[in-house]
Figure 1 (tube, rainbow, N blue to C red):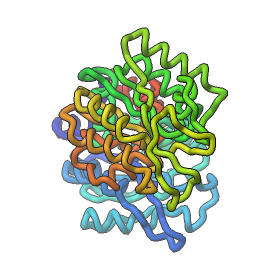
Figure 2: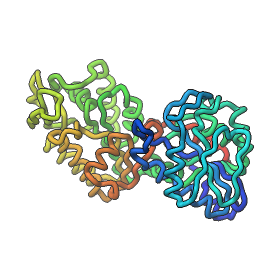
Figure 3: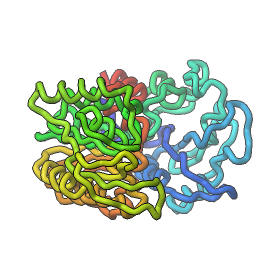
Figure 4: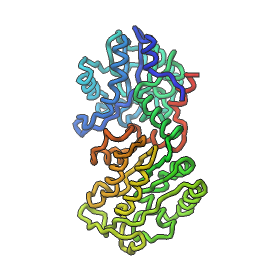
Length: 396
């Protein structure tokens, strides 16, 4: 993928005295009092801002936060807590500016935060009028918000069309490099772990990956549906019987290419979904009518871990069991450890996956951790992300 990068512009000394508009992803969780409870996204946005400041630019940053109603400001939609956290991290005052589309005062070496961009009428509908007004504020537009790259909005797509120069910031560039490496030029074998409660929510991803990967490891409710499609009984486990033909088609598609969808040979069952449920390991052929499958068993985990160990590339989206309950977490823990120990390149994304990475403390052993949930999934589906597509066009 060929796109302009902020780092290239800096290397060419093109930011000195220029007005730089950065679309970041500062959509952080807050408690009822408006305090930020987790600031990973803010910290991830710092490199782009710092690089632009150090290069002598006048820097404007904006982001969405929550789901505000366009044109209707409410205190809970304000980026004020984000401005305070940015000030602390950058060790400089970051002024918050409201009603900014008609003009922004900012000098080279200064950074300002522009209030929640989704308060502007026309943002979500990618209004040309709004996009042109915002583009007129800057000399250089930087998209550093991979998490919103799957949405064509005024600050993610429209501005990139009309700004004099449009480029990717370090966070977006790193995401695209990692995803491109994993899916477009992967070291083989390529293994994908796709897990979750429903096949239907990830069917397009499963089909897209079935064409590319050497092993497609399924987990959670998705694995139960594939077990059912393979003729195994799953008791009262979560599954989608109406998608058995789809599951069989994916198994067949993989088999024709000499690839596989490994079906569990043993499972961990419980009689109820609860943190105190008793966990029982059973062969996959011995699941009883009142059993619920909550994890893969140790034999299956060992087989899959061995496949991961031999992989050149691993794409991970979703834990393979109900890992929030420790008695049903051994499968996810075993695969997480196998990924951590693998010499292959690994990329992981999705909220539950990030929670598992944190729980098993392997963040520093995963090749790349994607920050964008929906954008990560759409990239896996093979979709072109609008905010990326426009950067590719502008680089031609």
